[in-house]
Image (cartoon, rainbow, N blue to C red; front, side, top):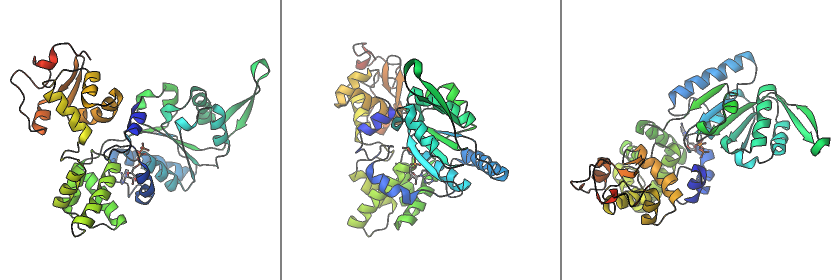
Length: 360
Ligand SMILES: Nc1ncnc2c1ncn2[C@@H]1O[C@H](COP(=O)(O)OP(=O)(O)OP(=O)(O)O)[C@@H](O)[C@H]1O
């Protein structure tokens, strides 16, 4: 199971970064329409702005663009902005939807001149489709193979110039020949709390929700650096403010609402805390093997590894070591527990979980 599958395996997770059906319904309304409205990602925004302006001045199509970064950081939104800034239509598809080279040939041959083709999860495309894409990106041409075996013939097909915008959660997974064919690569970072506050104020305006500065800060602090999560938490807090308060989202209302949804002050949810708690209370802070930890919390190994761990590692609460998972000192503090004397909290101790019984 990879990141994307694992994220989808936990679709009901309020803090999951992948879009759920509820998100899809409102996201269209919340998407910034141009680079000026797009919050944060200053470097990518400036670089991309130059690429697009130069292409407009030359009257040509923009170079192919690769956007990498975690789910929910705005890759789809940016691809739509690219099309809007270039004044061209956009076609949206994804790697897993293109399993045969013929699927890709059909899409490419039906593009309008200058159109943006957004290929989400480009790292999950099939090999033959990927190879067809090389030629399409470089020469705006594909060879369509007709027939099979010795009688097969390749018919060259000219394509209109287009801009490919590829999105991937893992740029490192792309084969170098594909990566090299992008003229510009933008790496999307997680957002700072102040940037998320701006996203929240903007979305609140569009959804007609009253949020004060404290309310926005409270939601931002629990949104794991991700605009999609910030927008989702805003909607849940809005519900709470409407039903249990006077409709205004203050710091206190936001905190109470998110307590109901079991999202803590640092943006951990029930699964994250269960993993940490098991690591601390059952295994003395580790090291403990991933499979053992997963059994202890009653989850699949992949769910713990792909859904809970990345954020815990990013927050400095958990470390992956060759001997297993280890809690940091911050993990003990966060759960309000006291680290036992023998636990260094960083894997240097000799706690009960470090007997080697539970190898990684
Ligand atoms: N920089 C931003 N400013 C304001 N809103 C943003 C920004 N980035 C993302 N959003 C909001 O977050 C939501 C998710 O963004 P988007 O769908 O573009 O993410 P993504 O990176 O393409 O995710 P995925 O990889 O899951 O497709 C959108 O509704 C959008 O409104």
